[in-house]
Image (cartoon, protein in one colour):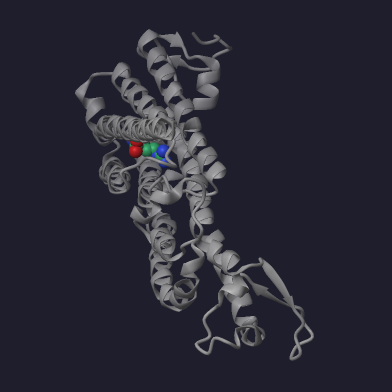
Length: 398
Ligand SMILES: NC(=[NH2+])NCCC[C@H](N)C(=O)O
């Protein structure tokens, strides 16, 4: 399968040359067919993880929102990825492709998290802030328009236009009266997100409060200050979470120092400790188990979000299909290489995690199919009802 380039090393067991490019780029030596199949599986897994999150990033981009995917699930991925990377570096029995795969999906998940945070938190917060700012700035200017309404609430006459220019006497700045619709739209959910009130997390709170109905303007403007403490505490919560994630490698400085030895360091450890990794191996496996628990638990918020919304709108199933293939090939890459318990045992956290995640991803894919079919059935039934009533109206008219 691989191009036999000039080789510098020989497999000690089979006295065969390593495959050049695999050795150069992956620091791995494929001695026999089993090794080649294992490497191919690892490579497929790597490619699947490389593309897995692109469909979801695209869906979020189209929706200008990340509401379909659970943020706690993505954060669990990031946290698990950090444990995974450090664990991979410290456990010499893990394959080089495992390490590169881990590096790759950590980067793509961070991108996905940043995109979701941008659409659901920063973008909205910024929009609300801008609207609130102009709302406060214009309060004085608004008063003459609301002369007939002593309570200060917005009258219908002000809602009719989108942006009314008000020459200000007090300030030389131009002031604009932000209309009810443009104010309310600050929290307007994007396409098809009528299901969003069921969503958990800070964005759900915003959605519930941020109705796009003009009649809700009064409520919307009044509820703004009371929203703030909730939003701040949540974002501080996530901030703390991120800070903890970022600080983790610092806390494990000694471990990271070892990790920086990179793959060659892992090989050295393997040789010195007969493949077990000794002290580092124990730490590596411990981190591996932490990672497995986080990854496995991470799917629960996504499953729960789907159940709670009764919908999978905004979720791209391709992410889970790719994850499923990636996990299956990942397991295969480990098991095909060797079924020797001595090699399997240190890989147990990675193996178990991937197997459980395959089951959970299958469940999420089935959820997707179920909710999509349900939606289609409801739509068809509604269409059927409409057609029947049209038929009767036509009959009565005749
Ligand atoms: N950010 C990632 N995609 N991490 C990969 C996680 C791998 C893990 N087995 C899972 O499926 O959850």
